[in-house]
Image 1 (cartoon, helix red, strand yellow):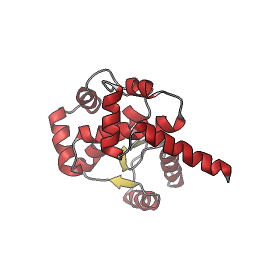
Image 2: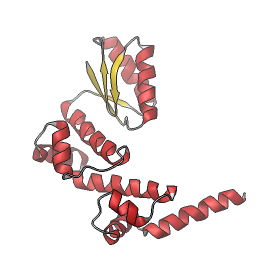
Image 3: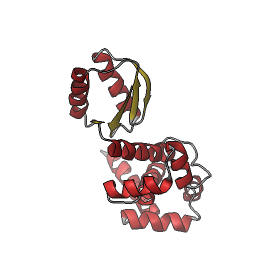
Length: 186
């Protein structure tokens, strides 16, 4: 039986969900971002208890199909951008459609309807979060980050970064370094 969980976006979340399942005497065969497959059928009491316990940690058990689909879309994007070493070479629309086995137009329309932004905007927001992360780690140049995240140029990345954050990537990086140095001086 598959259960879908909203806001399950990290390894820590996966471990927390596993622990909650174990407490209820349930065994997971698969635990992925946003989805758990359990071996046994879940009783209504177990379902309600799991729902209550997960919500204490900011996770929500999903019941309706549209919410489940939205979480699947979000999790494919999060996994693609934050947990893959390299972004797919194909169009994101083809990648998402292929991963979820749905027509992209249907996915895009449903996502826009429910979330109020389109999938492309959601991808851009996550790419900028990844850029911030990479800038903070200070292991890659802006050119390398641009290449890794499939931007057409450093200028394109910089423009998009500034549009979303209000800062240039270099100012953001300098600001983080200054904060880190100030903390080290304490």
